[in-house]
Amino acid sequence: MTQTIAGTNGSSGGDVNPLRAGVTSSRITDPCNVIFFGASGDLVKRMLMPAMYNLRLGDVLPANYGIVGFARSEYDSEQFRDEMHKSIDEFSRTGPAKDPLWSDFAKRLSYVSGSFEDKAAYAELRKQLEANDAELGTAANRLFYLSTPPSVFGLIIDMLDEAGLGPNNNKTGWTRVIVEKPFGTDLDSARALQAEVSKVFDEKAIYRIDHYLGKEPVQDIMALRFANVIFEPLWNRRYVDSVQITAAETVGVEDRGGYYDNAGALRDMIQNHVMNLLALVAMEPPVSPTADNIRDEKFKVLSALRPMDRNRIMQDSARGQYDPGSIGGKPVPGYREEPNVNPQSNTETYAAVKLFIDNWRWADVPFYLRSGKRLQRKNSEIAIRFKGIPHRLFGETGDSIDSNVLVMKIQPEEGVSLRFSAKVPGPKMHIRSVSMDFNYGTGFGVVSAPAYERLIGDAMRGDATLFTRWDAVQQAWEQVMPILERWQNSYDDSFPNYSAGSQGPSSSDRLLAADGREWRKI
Image 1 (cartoon, helix red, strand yellow):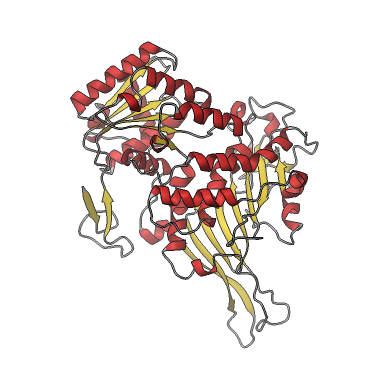
Image 2 (cartoon, rainbow, N blue to C red; image 1 turned 180 degrees about the vertical axis):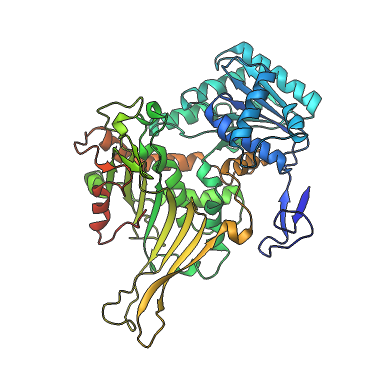
């Protein structure tokens, strides 16, 4: 079922936004059940259930669907509906749930209470899914979403198989599983988890979710490169000086101190989110836009990453931990003062690494990756810095001619900026850097939907393009393991070494200064 979007709100008539004219929106065709494990948790309440409701509000969900929550909390289905109503009212981007849409949505919600090792609960889940097939027409198609700690992924999958809910037992429909990050805590645990999951699910049925990949500007990286002739000819070592990828946050660990103190910035952000951005920036053009062809090219990039020289880890990486400071004029505690954090913690809240891709396109171009908490500003971006001009012709004495920079802005701003040199009006040839900016919201007249809406919809469609394949996960772990092992086995006496609300630790600045470069301001 296809709908053509004529105006800014998708309806016919009214003023037409020329950037959206003719855009089509496809409704999901396959009926199905979506089953959320960990349904009483924060992720379901804040993100996943509002995403499902907004998919329904946008007429994207199939005509026949069911949603089942599974968790330890002792709700019945009616109480679960009440809880989800509150969650949607509080967290949905479209505002509170309203009738008659809510009533139709609510009747498709059901709940199973039980622990993840409770066989009787899985039998009850199977009974509920079969009832949905009969009453809601969900056709035995099932999407299991594991919104749970990774430590129980293997258990849940084994129990599903034992209860006859695995793909091998489903003869009339399809069965898929979405796995939340982190996929393992190191290379060995990731391999062990993969062995567990792959005993039951084929790789094509496993959807490893990275919400960064669902963000509109991230998806546009490929369009920017491969739908425009002006960028791709310059996208190589002849013209690119360096690449900086930044994922900066102003928030601390909030209520995740127990988890984060055993994870850190390298595991939590660099190994997955930031590595995925690197792969999209650096990959070769795929032979077609299919999921496997795109993921093949991403895997090739990660395979070409130069192995980290263990003797240079301290020169080619930097770590930090935030001290008390202020964010937005308000005082905030240091990391070691956060709840459930070890007062002598050696866990990094900031990580930066320098990587090289040993292939024909990128040989000797440094890729600088950084991510940190409690920094001056929330800012995620990819900056392509081009090489300087080969010979200076213009500019008065004292004018600096900066390199051109193309910036893909991911959050909180969403758009693209190109920095180039221009003459200042007047009789003299003064040169200054200026910017051309594109913003998604103003350009297309819409607010980008949260990433989870896109990703859940894609999984229901069976489109794995924006999900991470196992071979890429393994390559990313192999790249960061030497750094992780070095950091875990050496105590950093400088911690805490940057103030909350700052640009990060000085060791990160030295990482680039050693190459005669500097970080862009956060």
